[in-house]
Image (cartoon, rainbow, N blue to C red; front, side, top):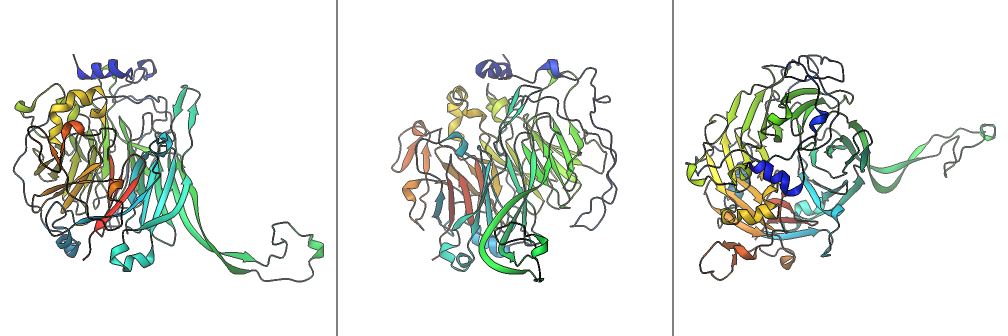
Length: 545
């Protein structure tokens, strides 16, 4: 029996109600609830290349369905292929030398810096961290949780100079980004959980970020205020208005110093454009537009326009019974404003060029690894589903994460990845148990270091893995409160898959699958990493002698 049907019978979750599908819908005839609109050809400009990118006619479909389809992967996993040494980048040669051993070499040691969050064993659902993101300078670190809150941590200025404490971050601002909602037309609850946070490059004293839950994206402005005006003519200091007839002299208002106050205010709200649950947002390199992706569609937005978006990918079939895959992640290229990729539950990655057509149904490149028949099993379709895709900072490579491995793709080679790293291959024998407890459907994220020489991703038992692309060495570390003294060096951990267990090794049977690291982030310029366990945020840095 198809594993998709088994999954649906197992947890009583289903595909979207087919009674909601659009009558007579087809690829050439789609129900459009908003009028077709134009974007001026001058509305988007690449800051990297300095040329204008024309945008043509698009259409967008308003929300009319709200049930998230659950589809496992439908593509098997292949073996490991020849690995190619990545080219060095012009950015961060010094950083690359420092990080050369981050994947397990002797050049670097990771030590504990901080842990944020309560120590209680009973964790409230709202406190579970759902996303982690550094800003472009690394000075700010934002987290989102299932309670709809965004917490921003700031690296203290004096700590930047002191190498031992540069990995210390303090709370900068906390605000409620999303609230739970209820769609009365569909009798559907919309969770407040923050799915993604993306920072915009700083252009003035204020910071801007995008946050999204399942349906609504918000643009937030984070600003500081350390002065207040005093000396109003028509208003008292306590805010009460004066009688104008009592004013006999005019005063010039002045600014007085006050305690620093950080304000978070919503500047834009982008809503009613996604039928299914949003899983990705990505800001374009022109810094004027961004994309948002749900299970079946990808929309293009302008940061200044909230009442319309433009559908650029639509994989919804006319008959929902023919649905075989869903979109799992999407991201813009870091340098080419017209290029983006999206991954699917079949284990494929499609690269699209928006210059080719308004609706990018036909991809420019298809990245897919041939299936290795020797590794074929009942669970192959599920574990090959891609949970995250990230471009390298240079734009030359692309990293994907499936359930068991991390793969590095060269954008110039589509038929197989240039590098494959096994994250927790010892779990292959435990897939049946992982299917029973639903862990096989966990979505792990991955990230690059600042020089693209090391990649990092999470695992179970609060383990996280690093892979050095130059030396081909790897290391397993643990985020644990047992080593919570500042500058305590993390000891590498090893898992014993079978046979006699050596000293300091952990048996695969003793792993705690309730403790998992799904979200990780790497400082863009330094050896500082942030990993999120259930409700705790751990910050580690390299040890400075």
